[in-house]
Image (cartoon, rainbow, N blue to C red; front, side, top):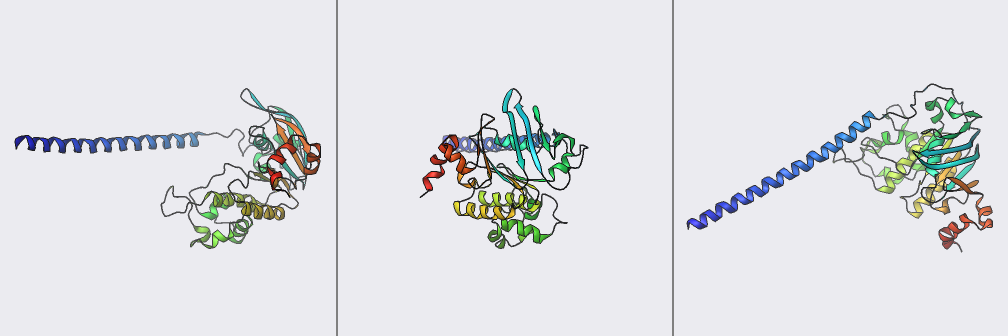
Length: 312
C-alpha cells in the first residue's frame, strides 16, 4: 500500500514537472520571438534612406517627355547586375521588360525610381540627370506596384492612399479599387473603406487572400494617377479571368501614360509598344511582339514554350 502511494506521488510529481518544463519552453519560445520582433523593429527604426526624399534639388515639372539611360551600369557590391545600358523611353508608350530571374528587370526599375543611383553612366529625365532633381518631386511622377507588396495593419482606405486617409476623397479611392478588380469584394465588407486590414494587431480584422491583397496593391497605383506607371508582376496572384479584367482596366487607366510592365507571363506583354529582353544585365533583344517572333530568337523561344501553347 505504501509503495502504491509513493508511486502515485512520484507520478504526480513527474506530470507536474513535465508541465512546468512545457510552460518554461513556451515562455522561452515567446521570449525568442519577441526578441526577434524587437530586433526587426530596431533595424527598421535605425534604417537610413540611401537617397533621402528631403534632398534638395530641381522640380522636374508636370509631365514626362522622355527618360534616357546613358551607358548605365549597376553593381550590388562586387556583382554587376546591369551593364552599359543605352535606351530611351518616350511619353505615352508602353514598355515590357522580360527575361529570366536575375536578368536585371527589377533593378532597372529601381534605378528609374532613383531608389539607387547607377554605379556607371547616368539616367536623364527631360534631358537632365535625375540626380539634379528633388527625389520627392521626381517620385511624384511615378506610381509603382512591386511584386513584394505589403498589406499594413490599418484601414482599407489607408492601405490604398498610403496615408491617414482623412483628406482623400472616398469616391476616388473606390474608383481605384474598382479599376483593380476589388469592387465586388468591397461590397461585402460591412465597414467598407474603414475595414481594418490584417490580424496583426486585432484578431477581428480582415486577412485578404493573396489575389485580393494584390488588387489592393494595384489600386494604389491607380489612385496615385502618375505620369509613369510601373507594374512589376501585377497579376502573379490572380486567376486568368481576373488577369484579363485587370489588363482591360490598365489599358483604360494607362492612356497617355508611360507604362512599364515586368511579367513572366508573356501573354500580357504582346500589345506593348516595345518589348525589351534582358539577359545577364544587357539588352539581348528589342522590338515589338511581331518583330521579335519574326526574328525567331530568344524571345520567340520563350513565347512558344509558354504562351504559344494557348494559340489556335
